[in-house]
Picture 1: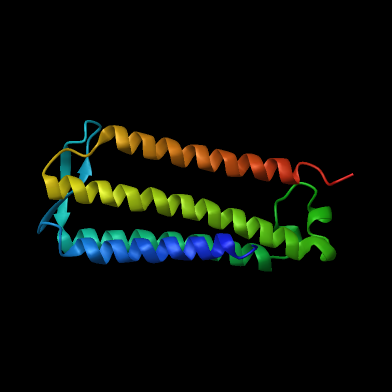
Picture 2: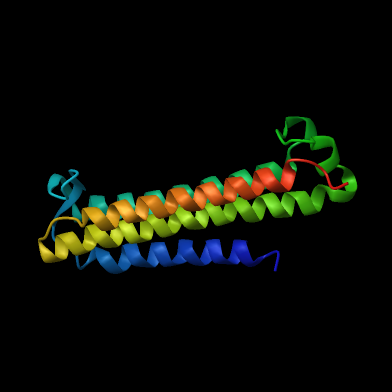
Length: 165
């Protein structure tokens, strides 16, 4: 079970990479890539540029969250900012604490990956259909990401607020 967030995150990364490659040949040569609040395109790029941007965003997020999880597990305890650090990073609890934090980081990364998968799909559909980007869908997507981040942060505060009695 400890590996589930990591496997899920890597599966989402793979799905986002596959999405970029699948969409590439289906996008027009000139892609609407930026939209105003009403969903009307106001910025364009080439299909190759859009695919490169898509791949770059996915790989950056993957490297960022994997890198933070790895670094957090390898930093000396005095460089980790955690309430009751001495308790949570004591040698007998360090591995479990690092595993929990790594799992939460990967869940956050997974939520961000889902956000971009759906956002890039909305951009693809807007270009395929020649219709405005769905502003309500984009707003709902952003709200869902913010709620997820809030829930993970709340879970971290609850978990590390104080050591068990």
